[in-house]
Structure formats: C-alpha cells, structure tokens
Length: 423
Image (cartoon, rainbow, N blue to C red; front, side, top):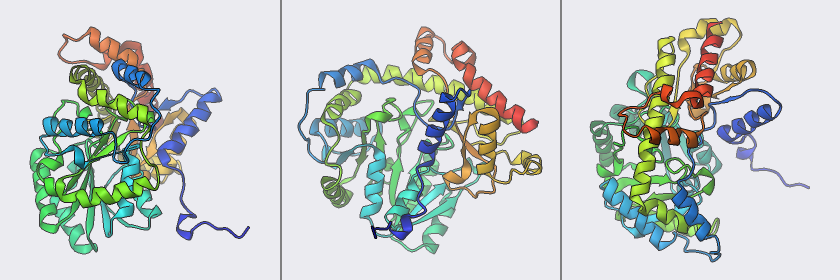
C-alpha cells in the first residue's frame, strides 16, 4: 500500500501519563513492587448515590442532544452560578466525553496561537501539534510557585502572533498550586487589554484543599471558557464526562464546537449523562464527600512535600489537586556523576532501581536538562481513607498518621526516592 502518515504525525507518541500507567502495570504484573506516583487518577470511589443513579439509568439507549442533556446542562450552569458566582446559562454549557476532547476541539476550531504556562498538563501542546496549531510555552519558575506573572503574559502577547488562546490550569497539574484573587485580577487585566481568550482549566477546582477555589471567569467573564468535569472531584475518570461553560459573548465558538462534535463523537453516553445530573444536584452528599477528600489530600500532600523539602528537595506545599512538582537540582552534581543528565533519565533510573514511578518534567513543557518531575500522591486506598476520615469527622485536621497502614505505600515511596538520591 502507498498510504502514509501525515508528516507532522510521524513523531507523535502516546500520552506520557497513559504510557507510564501501562508500563507500571506491566512491571507490577511481573512481580515488581511499584509505587504509582506517575498516573494522576483520583484514588477515591465515585459516591454511591451517583453509582446508583448510573445503574438506574442503564436502560437508556437513545442519542442525546450534541450539546448534552438539557437537565444536566442546567445543573452544571446552576453550579457555576451558585458556587463560582459566574453568569453561566444552560445554553452556554457543552458536554463531551471528557474535557480532554473539548480542549482538542477548541484548538481545532480556533485560528491563532496557544500560550501555555509551563509546567503544564502533558496533552495541551500535543493536541495543538495534531491540528497544526502554533503552541508556545511560557516558562514559569519555582520561586514564583510556578505561577504565570502578568508581565510574562504581556511579553508573550507582544512577541507571538495572535489571536491568542491562553490555557490556565489551577489548581495545577503537575504542581498542585493555585492563584490568589489579586493574581487572577492582574492576569484578567492583561487578557482584557489584549483580547486574549482564556481556557480556564478548573478540573481540580473542587479539590482545592480548603474549598476556596475562585474561577478566573469571575474577573474576566466575557473572555473565559471554564473547563471541568467528573474525573477528578468525583473520582469518575473512566466515565468520560467533561464540560465547557461559555459566556454569551462566546456562543459563536460553542456553536462551532458543537457542529464539530456532531460530526465526530455525537454525544456522551446517555446513562452517564443522566447519572451526572445527581452529581451536580445532590449538594449534601457531594459536599460531605468533598470535605473528606480535601482533608485527606491535604494531609498526604503536606506529608510528601514537607518530607521532601526537609531533605533539600525544592518543592512547594500543594494547595489543591493531588500533585507535587519536586525539583532535584540540588542533587544535580551527584546525578551527573551517575550519568543522569536530564529529567527523563532521572525518572527512568528511579523507576528501574526503586520501583517509584514519576513523570519527567520535560513531558510538562520544562527544559529536558532540568531535574524535576511530577509526583501524584494517590498511592493509597481512597475508599478506606474516606472511612477513616468519616470516623474522625470531629477532628479539626487530619494527619497522614491518622490514615495508618493505608498510607504505607506513600511513605515507602517517598523514602525510596530520598534513599536513592542520597546514595
């Protein structure tokens, strides 16, 4: 056959997170002890009431509207109105099989360039590459908590051809950091002045460890698309349900994306959409669930970051989600003596010699010669952790010690990292 790949796709590889998860599973199946800090999947079970709703709606087989079940879209809009204090209507919500699909469709639909603060989620730039869109990393720094500064954004807009799409993700994957109200306001001012369209990826918003997430759309409503879904805060990654929330000023873009959807994925599975209505309407169950998820993640995240920091690793305490982005540059001389010269080699040797799976920083848009990596501190049984936390509901703060043996793998994994870099 004379069929060939398009030239720009010849070097495309599998998503780094999915590839590492498969590799770790193979090593575990072969009998090796693996500390799975590489794959960012929620450790918590889907709340029972939402699982029951899926079972009750399993009989539904009809196609739903491309933009999503209206009742679900209304529930999502009400959530943004009430929780985020953002003026979103049901007509402005677009539901899809995961927010990842929507991000791809967005970059396919728009002209111009994509600006991505790095470190960033692994799929933003590859998606742009697939659709031949210009993507540009804006390198942030550890000393600024990996946050995008207004002057950095201003410089990027001045030097890169537009129109511009900025992807802002917080609480952040891979670093667990977030933005203050003043920081969001400052970025919003730059965006408004330069007519920058913002995709605010808030998939981890409900996992802010103090429950204090603030949406970018509150300060730049006319130019912000809010992205979220069930995968992280509801523990339902495999259900594949995400959404975009558009302001009225961007309905033209939502309509174009819906047209693309009608010719590609059509709609999210009907039973899942009906079950998701419960996830956005049963506030009492969800609030209780999130209270315990947040304090468990806060306890584990603080333990991991403080233990690494006390061992001379550059790392910030996470404020949300379930990630750390430690930098091991203080050990660079020792690593280079062992012929470890970049983040990829660092993570490969660490996995092979200790069983600890991390994702190298270069996959998140960082220069390959840096010694940083993403650590997803989810290597514990979320169901057991929830039971423990609920049994200690009257205790103000949870510690990793309260989780007992359930946190054993987390502790052992961190210990293995430190023993390895010191020896």
